[in-house]
Amino acid sequence: MEKLAKDFVGKAHFPFMYVREAHPGELYGAHQSIEQKFRHARAFREYGVERHILVDSLYGKIHRQYGGVSNMTYVLDHTGHIAFRAEWTVAADVRAVLEEVIEMHETRRAGGRVGLYYREILGMHRTGSNHPFLGGQQAVADMQRALRDG
Amino acid sequence: MVHKAEGNLLQTTDDVSPEFLGRDYNLIIWKQTRAEREYFRNEGPRVGTLAPNFELPSIDGGVVSLESMRGMPVVLELGSMT
Image 1 (cartoon, one colour):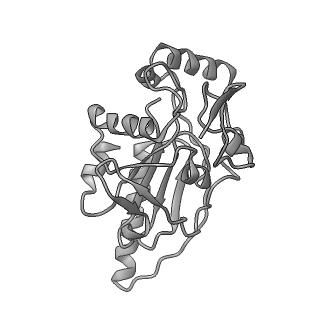
Image 2 (cartoon, rainbow over the protein chains, first blue to last red; image 1 turned 180 degrees about the vertical axis):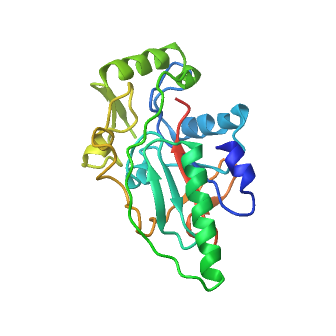
């Protein structure tokens, strides 16, 4: 997503909203104060996240308003309407939608007509990512349990 | 603000929504939410609707609103370290 954000500088905003830990571990545990949540959010800079990082309330007011799923992405068009949402973030999906949103916007601006249609897709991705290792061994064990138990 | 562990969830004396996800927040261990079990079909704002505005603090200081980003597409990712 960082590469995507760089590829679209000046063409799209890429806010990252830090929400509750999905697989809390000994390194990044469940939030018990807003100060702790901010510390965790700032740590993203150490992992190369250069996007604008916003911090949700301790009890996830906005996260819950936006569905409450662990790692969602929404793509909004130029007017703030939702063009795409997914409960898992896949940069290639986002890139395709973003290119389409921008192209259709430019078509409209040039006086062209744009037709809308609704579509759904069940996305699939490989599991077994070592991403939760950032949270520590407890987080790894938690992820393994989640994958096993569904 | 008082916290106590109850089951695998952190409970608090304030700001707890009575709805399912409100009781299910700040997990001590991962627990699949109703939204995730239902593959995200029924929770959150839908495609084609206006995204709810929010104002949230930035780690770089200040408060950022979603409305302030109008005029360009927005890729809003929600996530955590783990």
